[in-house]
Structure formats: C-alpha cells, structure tokens
Image 1 (cartoon, rainbow, N blue to C red):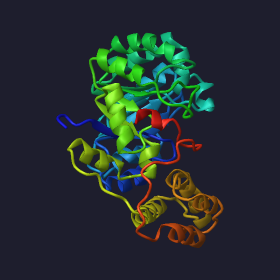
Image 2 (image 1 turned 90 degrees about the horizontal axis):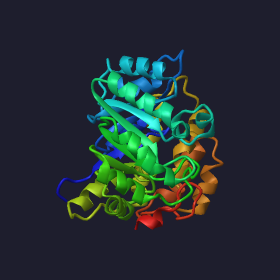
Image 3 (image 1 turned 180 degrees about the horizontal axis):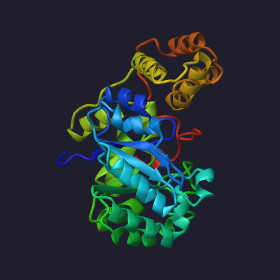
Length: 336
C-alpha cells in the first residue's frame, strides 16, 4: 500500500509503561508511542516512573508526552518542563472516560466545557514550540456533538488529531462511529488517527477503509496481540500476515513477566503476579474460558507459569479475534 497508514500504541494508564513498550517493540512495535498521562494540577511535579518512558526508552521510536488536566497555567508549565526532554511532542488527553477524571473536568470531561477546552488548546499551541497533538472522543453524551468539536480543532495548528470513535459515556461498550473520524479526515489540515475497536488485521483494514484516516492507534488489541503492528504492515504490503500459535504467546507472556519484574521497586512475587493480571485479562480473551478462570485465581509465580504452560505450550494457532461480546472487547465486528 502506497503511503502505508501510521501505526501507534494507545496509552493506557498503568499498562503501557516503559517495560511494556520495550517488550512490544521486540515484536515489531508501532511507529510511535505515547506515554501514560502526566496528571497535571497546580502542585504537580513530573512523575519519574512515567518520565522514564522518555528518558530510558530504547525502542528507537518517537515518544509523545501525554498531559491530562484542566488547569491551563499548570498544563503550560509542565509542557515547558517536558520540552527539555527528548520527546517527539506534547499530546493533550481529551478522551479519558474514567469517572474520577471526568468529575474533575479533565480528559473526556473537558468536552463538556468547550470554551475552557478551546482556551487550553489555544494556550498550549502558543506555548509549545514543537509538535502539539490532541486525542479526543467524538462527544461526551452523543456523537452529534462532534461537528462542533471539530470546528474548535480546525481553528488551531494541531499536528495530529487522534480520535477514539466513541463518546465518553459509551466508554468501550459499543461500536465506534467511523463517520465522525472520516469527517475529521476530510476537514482537518493534519493527519487524523483512528482509535477504537481494532483487534486484528481485518478490523484494522476496515477502520482505514471506513474512516479514511491516516493511521491507527491500537491499545487493547495490541496487549492481546503484540504482533498486530507487523501483521498490519504485512497486509498493507500485500503480504501474508504471520500466523501466531499458542507457544508464541507463551513466549510473549514470559518476556513481559520478566521485563515488568525488572522495573519493579522492592519486588514482591505475589504483587507481581497481580500486576501481570492487568495484562493477562486482555491476553486470555478468546483462548479458553478455563484459562481465564484459572489465571484470575493464581497467587504465586509457580501457579502463574504453570497455568500459562498448561494452556499455551503447544503449536495450536491462536484465534485472531477475541469474543465479540466480551467485557473488554465488543463492537469490533462493525469494522469488518
């Protein structure tokens, strides 16, 4: 495919950290990364754990620093501090649907305060000398809000607009609204990246075809399948994507286990197993119900590794997609 779509890893708090970035890069990785969000407020100091995703990143790929908050002065201050580090740009989060975030009028909550949202965008654009990108949802309560939001985005020199194709209130429980992303792709003077519901090659190709976006940002689908970026690149080049077997997944889990352990402070085996469950809940989707049942109940490294071997130590091909109506993945069939 000429001008192959851009591929990015969607930031997910407490999940897409430095060790995860380094592991997923071993499987091809995205074209660029975005940090977990720096939760900005008046007294905020840069979190070293998140900052390490920039300063200690050895993936060889650009990294954008993501900000979330509603205090304009604090956002400008932190953006200026971050520009002293080797970042590809600053990204403003207008999409997080977490109730604790939205109650503070940050993330997706800012979509309800459009004048203040616009003030933040305008002020950050003036303050940031390099690239300034925005990630948004298509509205707070309804995707009918999106045309008005788009008019705001069009007024400023945004370098990339990433759109999660659901509203804030839809969270992750519906199909996306590709027509909103397509509208932005037609009207914005910058690349528009489509986010939401890409779980395999078919849904990735479908998202590009339905939205005409310049690229894809993938989060949950990449945790479950770290090969997805290279599989998409192969498809874009009219090559056959790699077939993944269970033993391949077992190797990925092992790498992830040890990478995350190596970055833990005061390593505790039981706590580490619980930390791995954040990733495993995505990984197990669509494999075996018994696998998910057991992995939720493991408490020790020994039981964790034994459970993984019991279900994955063979060469049976993995299903390319999770269940269409699981708690963590749903609505993606609309993209096929």
